[in-house]
Length: 226
Image (tube, rainbow, N blue to C red; front, side, top):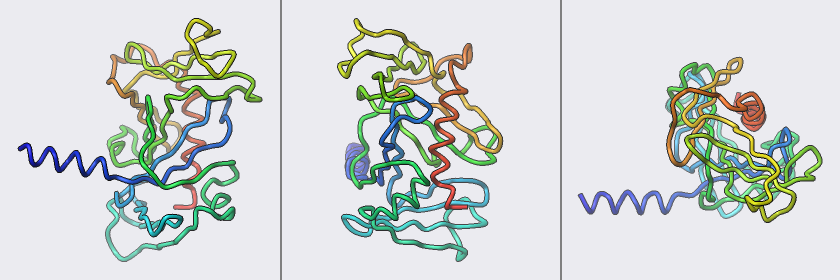
């Protein structure tokens, strides 16, 4: 058992990710990042799935499968991208200014998992995930304020601050963003909301409409799959 646990720890520790970080606020929210683990099958819909692979220090490959959600079969297309090229950013970020890199999963306080035609968020474990950093970051319409996400009492909160220290004594307001563990469907897109500490009973949805719009916008960068 100890050997198995150690092997699992080593496997997780050695995992590498393709990481895309937005360079500015989206819908007034602080920048989030999307991290996709190399070699893992990503469930996008019942008919579409994908696998990212690390080709070199600056290149990745994306294999997209159609007519399957399990990355199997011969009906697939593989494309190699150099993440240092501007054309790759334009392609993968679909108009958003972003930073692309290969590395370890950064620290985060919460994350969301987005899928298509998955009304009960049953495939959230295998879905594309967007993460909310523990950092104090610029936010607001013109990046004129600073924000920091925190998890308290089973909810994700967004504190707004006057400077990049994000000290609670200087916090001007604190918005409840979502209930940890909630599943929301908007059109054909389903979003499952996670926190690092757990879930809470469904008493309030918080500001799901705001954060859902941002998550769906981030999920839109994967439109080239379809």
